[in-house]
Each structure stands twice: as structure tokens, then as C-alpha cells.
Amino acid sequence: MLKVDNLCAYYGESIILKDVSLSVEPGKVACLLGRNGVGKSTFLKSVMGLVKTPKGSVYLDNDDITKLPTYNRARKGIGYVPQGRDIFPQLTVYENLVLGLERNGYKKGVLTKEVFELFPVLNTMMKRKGGDLSGGQQQQLAIARALVSEPKILLLDEPTEGIQPSIIQDIGRVIKKIKERGNVTMLIVEQYLEFVMDVADYFYVMDKGSIVLDGKTEGI
Ligand code: ATP
Ligand code: MG
Image 1 (cartoon, helix red, strand yellow):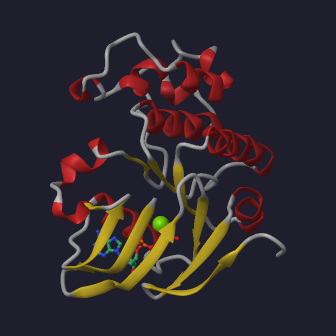
Image 2: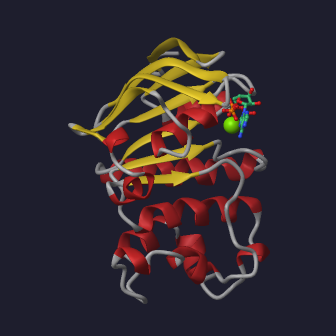
């Protein structure tokens, strides 16, 4: 369960998020929609503690994680895939997947079976360089990396950006498979409406740093 109450965020003196509240029920998928520059990425960064939030709370189950230091948030169970593909082109797929995980007690060579099952396309590519993968494959790698640490919450920032329509379906399939497992709650920032209707249970629309509309995708 992710619940955000009256979150405000600033860059310098400019207010970017104004009392944003939303919630995502356990195991559900919510999409955050909105035009360019309205504050969607800033919202995800605020949840991660990467932007200062002088007001508001972010509850993961019943804990207010705004009280925790930023480096603790991932450990507390949030996976975050930022906008743009955060892949290291010179490292192999495997190295990209396990990067930084050892610090959190991850044992080298023990990739979870689930991650392999979710991303069959990556299984055959463990030794290839991250930079040699297509855009869609890189996006899958970025999502896989966020899942290796078994988060309760997964935040995805525009997973279909810059990806060909035919490949977008692959990303949708992966998200549906993650959902079927039932143990990850997802919040996806997205602009591609067809994709949202396909994968999300409900949606929120942001404009000028506020939520202006919300509802269920069912029946639209
Ligand atoms: P897009 O759809 O283009 O990704 P977005 O909804 O994700 O847009 P944000 O990236 O959250 O929008 O940006 C919201 C506002 O904050 C914009 O006006 C942007 O110019 C501004 N902004 C973003 N990052 C910074 C920063 N590091 N410093 C100052 N202003 C910023
Ligand atoms: Mg953005």
C-alpha cells in the first residue's frame, strides 16, 4: 500500500507540487498522467526522497517514510526506474542487474528465479553489453534491476518513452506478469494512453503540480 498525503515540493523558491495526495492499494497498478512539465517526475523523486518535501507524508503500509533518510527508502522496499534508461552501456546485462546490490546483502550469482521468469528475453543476453540492447530491452533491464531487490512498491517513470509501439506491448506484458504475482504495488508515470488503459487499475491526472482528476480505467 502506498499512500501520499498533501505532499509539497520545491525547486529553490518555485513550488512544483502543491498538496498532492494519492493512494495505490496493495498489488494494484495506478498511472499518473499529465502534460510535459506538470511535475510527474518530481512527484516520483519526492516519494524517493530525492527532492525536498517540506510538507506532507508518504506512507508505505503504515510507516511514514519521509522520516527516513533517503538512502533507506530503497531498503524499505521501493524500487524506482527513473525517466530515460538508466543503463550502463559498458557493463554487461548481468553486471547492470546486480550493480550496487551487494551492499544490501545480495549474494553474487544468486539472481532470483522470478526475475528470470519475468524477463525471458534478458536470460539469453546476460553477457552482452547493456549498450548493445534495443530500447525496449534496456527498459526491461531497468525494470528487472529494480525488481531484483524485491520491492513492495515499484515506481516507473515513462517506461514507454522512446520505444516503438510494437515493443511497448512487451513492456505491458512484463508489467502484467509482475501484477499477477500480486506482491508488488505499482505507480507508473505514463503519457501513452493506450498503454495506461491496458495495464492500470486506476489513474490520476496531474496539472501544474496538483491532482486534477482521478478514476478507474475500467469501462473507459
Ligand atoms: P515530462 O512529461 O516532460 O517528463 P514532468 O511532468 O515529469 O514532465 P518534471 O520533470 O517533474 O515534469 O518537472 C516539473 C517542473 O519542474 C518543470 O517546470 C521543470 O522545468 C522543473 N524542474 C524539473 N527539474 C528541475 C530541477 N532539477 N531544478 C529546477 N527545476 C526543475
Ligand atoms: Mg517526467
